[in-house]
Length: 368
Image (tube, rainbow, N blue to C red; front, top):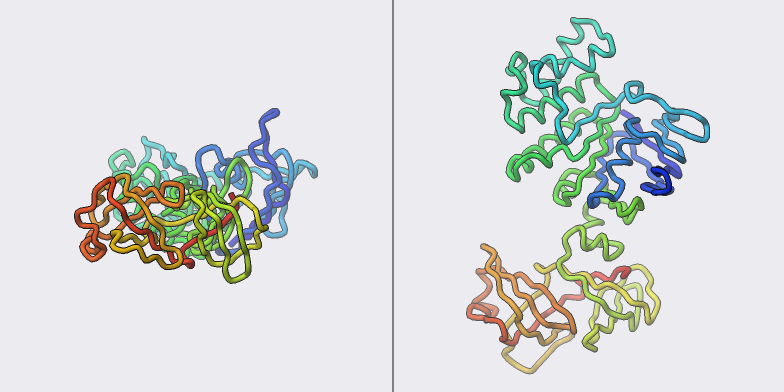
C-alpha cells in the first residue's frame, strides 16, 4: 500500500492556472474521491499523481519517496511509481485477447512467463472473468471491458490504484453494480485508491473521504456523511444535491441555534454550526425531501411554519414535487405520493395556498 502526501501542488499552462497550492494527504488503504464539475482540476490532479502530467510547483510524495518536485528537479516516470490506472475509455488493445491485455504491463516489466500466467489468472478471477482469458476484448460488453481494465490495473500488485471516471460510459444500472464491485475489490486488496468522478452518488457510495473541487481549489474534504449533511458553502451544497439554496442574513448566532432573516422578512430558526457574524449574508440550504408541506387549513403558525403559494406541481413517481413561493424566494418540496391525502394535498393545484414546515435540524446555514 502507498500513502500520498501532496504539498503546495500547482499546475499551469502558460498564464492559465489549473491547480494552485493544493494540500492533500491520503492514508494507506484509503479510498479518496475527487469530486467536482468538468474543468475543476480533479483529473489534472490525478494525472500528476500518476506521473502523466508534470507539476509546475510543489511536491508529491509516496510515503517518504518524492516522485515529483520541480524545485528539486525530481520527476519519477509513471512506470516507476508502482501504480495501476483505470481510464474512462478503458484503453484496451482491441486486437488482443483478454489475457494479453491484462498481461501487457507485466510484460513491460519483463516479468517471467510463469509469473505472468499466474498473475493474469489471479487478476481475472478477482473481477469474475477467469473463463474469458482467450476471448477478444472486442467481443465483450462495456461492463466486461471495464473489468478487464481493472484486472490489468491490479495484475502487477500495485500499491496505488487510480480511477479516472471509469464508469461514465456505462448505463445507470451497470454503474450501480460496478461501483459496488470496485469498492469491494479495493477493500479486499487493501490498496490505496484515488477516484475521480463528477457523479455525487458514486462519490458518496464508494469513498472513505470525498474532496470537492472547484476551479482548482479544495472546497471541502470529509467523509461522505460530512459532505452530504453539512456542506461548507453554497457550491458544495449545490453540487451534492441540495435543491433549495436560499439567501438570508444572520440575525442571531450561537453554538446551538441561530436565527436568519429571510428575503421575505421572516425569521427562520436553524441549528448552530460554524460561527457567523450578525449581519452576514449566508446561504440557507434545504433538501426538498426535508421540507414538510401541508395544505393551509388554519391561520395558526408555529415557529418555522411559513405561508406559501403553490407555483407548480410535478409527478415524479413515488413523490410529487411542489415549487412554492415562500420566504421571498422559490422553495422546492417533495412529498411522498402516499402522504398527499394526509397532508391535504391530493388535489393541490398551482395558485393554492399551503404551509411549509421546517425543522431547525434540517436547515443548513453555510457560506454564501
